[in-house]
Image 1: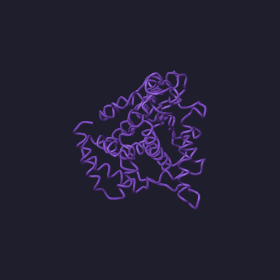
Image 2: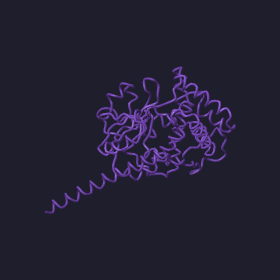
Image 3: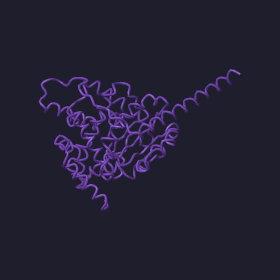
Image 4: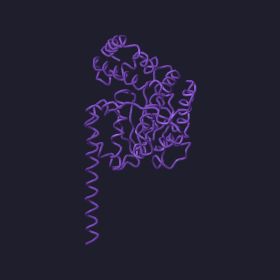
Length: 333
C-alpha cells in the first residue's frame, strides 16, 4: 500500500473508533483480527473515498446487527432433506486452495435451478457460506501461512446456461447485492469456464458496464480452463468440472463433486452449524423457516447490469423464435 492508502486507513480507523458498541462488536466478527486489511476492502470498494467507505461499512454493520448475522452459523437449515434440496439446486462448493492459500470456490451458474426452496433459504445458505469462509477458512489459512489471507477465488461453470436463466435474475441480483454491500472485495479473481454462446453474448454487453476494477478480476478461460487454472492451483484443488474429459457440473461421483452435500466441505460446514446450534443450549430442535434476512436495495450499477442481461436474453429468445418459425415454414413448403 502507498502512503495515501495508509493515511486513508488511519483516518477510516479513527472514524470507526467512534462507532456504537454493537457495531464495534459485529465488526470484530468481520475483521477477525485483520482490521486494516478489512478497512482497506471497504475503501477499495468506494475508490478510497473515506467518507463513502465509512457510510458503506456502517450500513453493513447495521445490516448485520438488524439481521443477527453473527448468529447465522448457529442456524441450521432444517430438516436435512430441505438442506439437501438447497444444495442440489444452488450449486456452490469449495474444491481446495490455490498455491498461495486462497480458498477456491466453485459455482455452477448454468445448472443452478433455485427451484426447490424459497428465496430465504438460498439467501441463508449463501450468507452461511460467506460467514464460514470469513470466520473459519480464511483465519485458519492466515494462521497456517503466517500472513493475512482475506480473499478467495471463484470458478464459474457456465455449463447448461440457457434462456431459462431469465427466471433467476431477481434471486441472483439479491445475492449479488448482499455480496456487493456487505462482503466487498472478498473475491480476488473470477474464472469463467465452459462458456456457451449465450454467456458470450451477455458478457459482450455487460463488460462495458462494469468498473475497470471489476473487469480486471474476470478471466474467461478456454474450454474447461484446466491448463490455466493449474498455474495457480494443484490438480486436487481443481473443481470437478474443470478436469479434462469433464462434462460440466453434472455426471460426477459424490466424493469428487464439490457441489454435493456429501462433499467434505459441505459436511464440515453443516456439522459446524449444527454443533454451534447445540452448544448454544437450545432446548428445542431447530425450526424450519426460523431465519429471515432483510434484502438490501441493489445499487444503480447492479440494476443496470440485471436489466441489460434480461434484455439480451430476450433478444436471443426472439431470434431463436424467429429462426424456428422460418424453419417451420420451409419444412411445410
